[in-house]
Image (tube, rainbow, N blue to C red; front, side, top):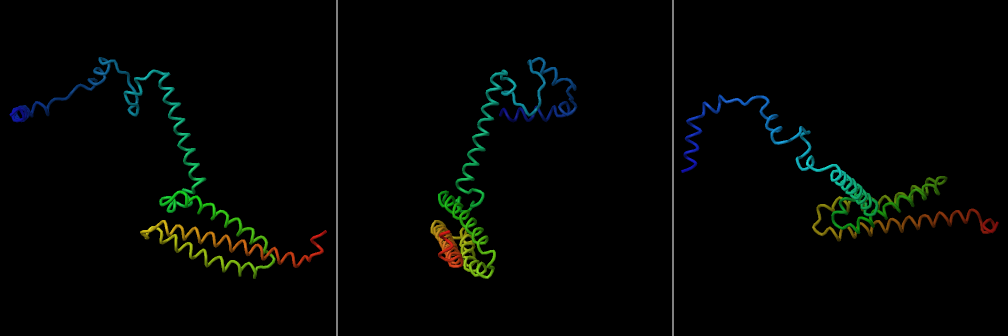
Length: 191
């Protein structure tokens, strides 16, 4: 009933509403009357109502929160390999950390192997072929990770593959050390 009266009033006085235009300085006068100062639109009324010392406290708190947030991101990135292993991180952060550490260790051992076999490229190629097979297997497992229902088991297989790669690299490095010892002979080691 009340709604009908309002609708009838608006309909009857529609021409008056359309013809009405407020003065250009009306809003400024209203703000002056309410005691408001002009402020940028991006500042809310709560922020401008604070005195300077409270505003400073909020700025310091925001800065501390930002520093803690960035520090936390860096910590998780470094310790858990968020950006290096995001797919594993989503399933299990502990495995992501292990995978990241193993991957870094494999890279170090591969560069060491490459350095030690510079003067024997055929030997390096033979070692690299064995390692490439394991790496392809690892990449296949990694591609299957989003598709498989039992991701935890697949990640364990990925970690086991990385351990096998590390073991293979260690064996290859030991072979190279034995070859060098044989070339140098037993008497040259004593000198």
